Structure formats: structure tokens, C-alpha cells
Length: 104
DNA sequence: AACCTGACTTCGG
DNA sequence: TCCGAAGCCAGGT
Image (cartoon, rainbow, N blue to C red; front, side, top):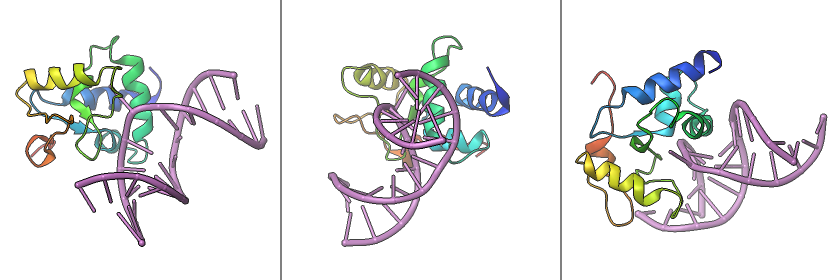
């Protein structure tokens, strides 16, 4: 790991409660850098295995799974459904219902 | 150093 | 709501 931002990102992702989802930008903001959404992706790819992160709870700002089909898209949808999150056929989640609101 | 790339986001049309 | 363009940051060539 390297830097405070990295630690905050990992910490924030681990904090996402079961049955809820967070967006890349939201995690970045929580970690202290609202513009670093793309970096969150990097950390996910690097530490999801190593740190046992709930990577499947992170989706994009449109409420849709960003993982390309054939590269884990279906797996992510399955993992979310297993937690009780409603995922539509086109891999979309209703953020008004499932978006994680820290503190709230 | 320039250039490309990516599990992103926001803004206009 | 759905694109396309532009902005964004870090790592790899």
C-alpha cells in the first residue's frame, strides 16, 4: 500500500455494508479525492483479492455494473443478488434504494 | 517527456 | 434517458 489516499480507499470499500452499493466516485470522495474515481478502479483490481474487498459492491454513477461482459459482469450481478440487491437484466441497480449513505 | 489506456464523471444536446 | 465530448489521475510504453 502507499499513501493515505490508498488506505482510505481500501477502508472505505471495506465499510460498504452488505446489501448496499457505492459508486467509484463516492469511494474516491470518501478517501479525500473526488476526482480520483479512476484510481479507485486501479486499487480494486490490485487489492480486491489480496485484501478480500467487497469489490462487487462498487458500481458506476449511473447505477450500472461497469465490468465488461465476460470479465466478471455476470459474477458481480450474481454476488449482489445473493446479498438481496435487485439487479435488472441489463445489470442496473436502483441507486435511490441501494446506494450506501455513510453515517446516514 | 509524449502518448495511450482504463471496472469513471459531468455536461450538453 | 441515451450518446459524445471533455475532464480527470496514475501507470505503462
